[in-house]
Image (cartoon, rainbow, N blue to C red; front, top):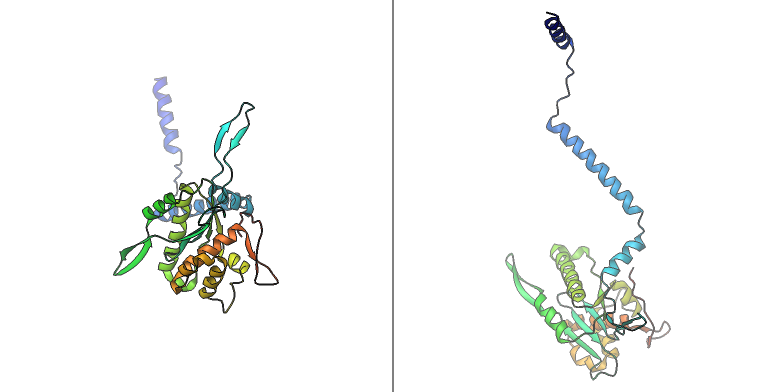
Length: 268
């Protein structure tokens, strides 16, 4: 009987204990909690990014585009013998109507060469448009036998309000495609803002046209003047000038004559 009394007392205690009701967790509550959590995570990510300087992020990006010299052999003193740095310089106007310029040392028979960017026609909506031919780009680079570690200077793609959505998409696509193909081919890439190289050659500002770029390229590379005589050859001219910028050729500040200086592989 004692055990039965104890059991009955336990039941009375449980029945007299108030039940605490939990708040209902409806969809709105879940949405609010989810939004708050996302804001917290985003805030934490921003704080983490601000700890890394802009220069460090830029260096990391440029390092990802760099193809260092290859290890040829290791001598008995465990000293590494690296491949000599390439004396070639490439310049690229990444537009679909652009070009690839190659500047070799002067002991080559043709120290300066320029090639139109390979492209193919595709149907976009109800219009025929030109797009870069990736396979032909790879084949072009292979045919040139470019030394590993050669540096290519490419005009940095920036969207302009007047270009429209198609122009923005095409410009960014071509720019990224060229970078990918070049790095995969063992070529280091240095992006150069158009403002920078054009200022160096006094081609920026009002009144300057693509004809001025062709005229300067003809004076700088007279053996290629026949390849630059048409208006639509401005892509070839700009690719040559970008390569000349990368090679260190500059206009003297007090005259229109040219001079050669050393350049660093940096962008702004």
